[in-house]
Length: 486
Image 1: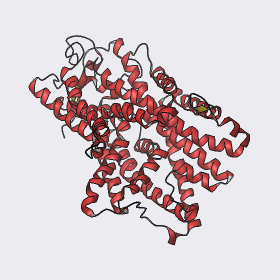
Image 2: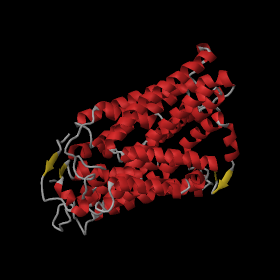
Image 3: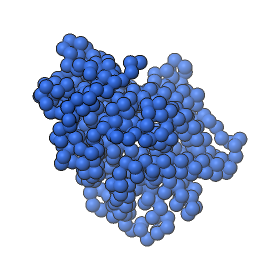
Image 4: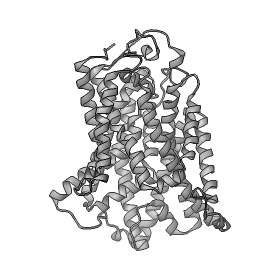
């Protein structure tokens, strides 16, 4: 692989920089910090349910395990690719995009990614609040009177729990990136300990002889029939991590070296995900002999244990797990993204608070309960993550050949390397359109065309967009070169 180089150029324009967007002077994160980041990202209720839900596809246990591992290995490779440019230059995701989209055009991917994060930030906060409600109802039964829907589809108790978590997450975020790192370093292992305790408790009640690692539901599939289903399961894993994978540069920029980031990714993705998946399967399997039914939602599992200590410990653990993934996946991204739009008016903290306030205004509890809203809005925005990923990788590795001028990412001089045409790289804009339309169509067409079985197409929207984005960017740059290696 070509060794990346960093060239120096003009002084930074204040209209493009602030203390949060400027290249880091010190990069101190170790492999453990990256490993802990991924622990927080994996150990969520959503990750638990996603891993358990693959058994409903009719796959055998070894096929589910293969799909999980194949998907997470792909995520690991892609995360290393997107990590390198930000680690080498010390700048976050929206800034490194200036090399590809232009110093002003970089706001296109930033706003798209930030908008997705706002919506999911609200949804994840709402899901965590449901764990908190369980604790309230168990220890203060009188609060049940507050748990009836009242205003805009949410109960008074729901608002109280949502507000508690909203404030708690904002408080951690407001203290800065170092406080977030410390929280994540502690939260990931803590969740593991509780999940191990939960698994041991359920297995001891069920008896190891009653634990089956094959949780397949529905009609079993033959080998030939299972291949497309396994491919869809692999795509599901990649899609689940596509958001934090796209803006992983926001975190890799803190890595003390690219080797440290790669080690952290290896431990936090394939190794950690394999152990987490096995733990998930064992825990879910134990619910069958203990409760008489398969339960893949850990919150419901804790509810069924119905002992005060278990509900308190389990509820708080899943709150911590969801807060961890929410901050790293859906808070930090819009903080950098919105700050990039107007660095002097919007600081990193202000950008994050814009996202936090916006998430409430979207009433996420209604979004989560409305599949059409998620399908058409978040599905469409999510379909653009693939193209943006492919374009960034093509722009940095193929077009710029890993040779960038850091300081020229911070100048509005029309003669600057990344000014292109009025601050925008037309090739990147056209590549986004060329790849985005088919990716969006992959989400919409199965919904509109019911005469033909096309549901599988939506599962691969990220891959379709990523591949087309990469190809379109390379072809357009070869036709009319805009990105000149530093």
